[in-house]
Amino acid sequence: MNSCFPFAVVLNTAAGRGLAQRQWPRLAAELQARGLPYELLNASSAQQALAQVQALAPGRPVLVGGGDGTVAAILPALIAGHHPLAVVPLGSGNDFAGMLGLKPGDFTQALDRLRFQPRQVDALEVQVVPGEHAEQGGHVGQGGHVGQGGHVGQGEQAGSQKVLLNGLGMGFDAQLTNTMQYAPGFLTGFWHYTWGAAASVRHLELVQVEVEVDGQRLYHGPSAIAAVMNGTRYGSGFLISPRSDAQDGLLNVVWSLAVNRPQLIGLMARVLPGRHLGHPLVRHARGREVRLRWSSPVFTHLDGDVCGRASVVVARVLPGAVCLLNG
Image 1 (tube, rainbow, N blue to C red):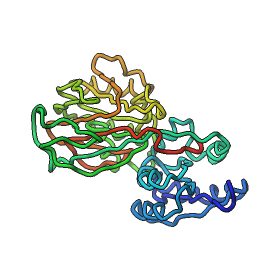
Image 2 (image 1 turned 90 degrees about the vertical axis):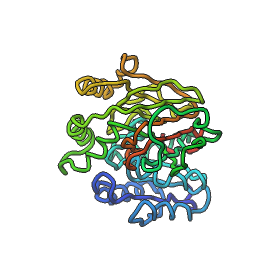
Image 3 (image 1 turned 30 degrees about the vertical axis):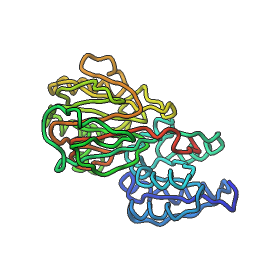
């Protein structure tokens, strides 16, 4: 990297329960040993990090030390400013980095890959209608379909809009992500997620969902879980969407039919190694635009961060939106 064009390093000091902050001296030493100039962006919150990346000169490369949530926080500025992205996985989940084969805390591997040819990867633009604003119950009629450009249709109040790199989950997986905040502090990664699953399964809810892909309704019925993915995995390694390809210009959606508690536990065991597609209680599809509408609000997570309960989510692909330097 040219010394006149140093990396802007975004370090999430809270990522991985403080792992990023603890590992920063080692990462800084590695950058210096390789002769890679950098500028550390001191940010105490996601909003501050976003503002600082927005203030960078267009095209300035950004290196993120954190997990999926850290990348998601600054992703709008990365895309708008055409900032090439390098990732050093130091978060709790690191699922997008994991899909790329990057191991948490392995600075050598992550920085060695800067010699790779940069590649363009897709992102997701997501519109979320919070539960308190969503219509309740039933099938969406003619006026309620997704409009052009990923907007919700007539009769549905527009909610917040987000940009994601990895994906989103609704229902049981988002509920357990919310539950994980109460897990013992010594649990991390896969075991952190597993604790959340065990604690959440007794609160299993089946809610009516309508799944629409590229304007076609593919399912309308009870479900416990649905995910819209650009990456292949979530929850620190659960391979929820093994057929995803972040360079194919398509989103993948995976959802369950009606399941009871034992069936859900069995499905989650299959999800871990990615052997659930083809199971009679699982459906999946791909397209450019996906819309999920639930009859009542369900827990929702965006790139691993719970955003509360929502009833409607519309996601569309942004093909080749991010230039990845170490993928």
